[in-house]
Image 1 (cartoon, rainbow, N blue to C red):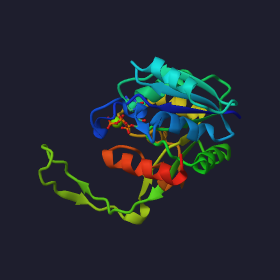
Image 2: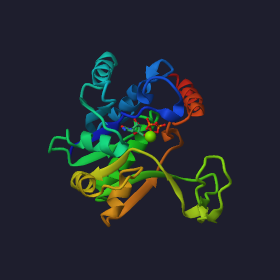
Image 3: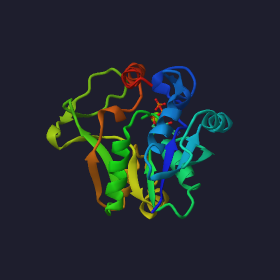
Amino acid sequence: TPVAAVIPAAGRGVRLGPGAPKALRALNGTPMLIHAVRALAASRHVSLVIVVAPPDGTAEVKSLLDAHALPERTDFTVVPGGDSRQESVKLGLDALPPEYGVVLVHDAARPLVPVDTVDAVIEAVRDGAPAVVPALPLADTVKEVEPAPEAGAPEPVVATPERARLRAVQTPQGFDRETLIRAHESVTDNVTDDASMVEQLGLTVVAVPGHEEAFKVTRPLDLVLAEAVLARRRL
Ligand code: CTP
Ligand code: MG
């Protein structure tokens, strides 16, 4: 069954600081979004990439896709995004043709994910999992706190979950098409990833090994790391 990838790229990148929308900022001279699109299109299983662009930037995204060398075997669609990531993914799914039975959702802000990680997620969905997430063990101990009303004020610690049972979850997350569409139609709470919507349907989500280089470019230091990784790859 053919595989499509939806790439939400409509965020502003507030935590990165002032500038262009995050997905359009350059990493070693090439827009982050183009790195992300190449990373997904590098999988020979992925035959369609749907880019969810900043609402005022669809024309710019289309011309970027035209201007950069991308695999011939992959089709590209650009749609305008929404106010939240969840809304943007849903707008991407609205543009998904019926023949795609497997859907990946991948943050444009994870431009360096290796193709082996992409293929591992696809394989686990094809093996029958309705939802698959790439995940890594944590380096830091994680504490649950009672969030303080003002930023910077001390916060009481409520609990310390056992670190060995925790995972940091990345993208691409992979789904059986019907499952993801149903999740987006029925779950309306604010969520930070797509798999949690499938969990809310009562289905089992499985984690496969993620990769360090699939980290999310979120803050200025992440740009330094991303450019260093690219330099090491000589891109
Ligand atoms: N995203 C989106 N539409 C939104 C918000 C986010 O498509 N309304 C996308 C981002 O472009 C990004 C991915 O979702 O590729 C993950 O979001 P995040 O890292 O939070 O990016 P931003 O929302 O752009 O960053 P910030 O939260 O710092 O503003
Ligand atoms: Mg955000």
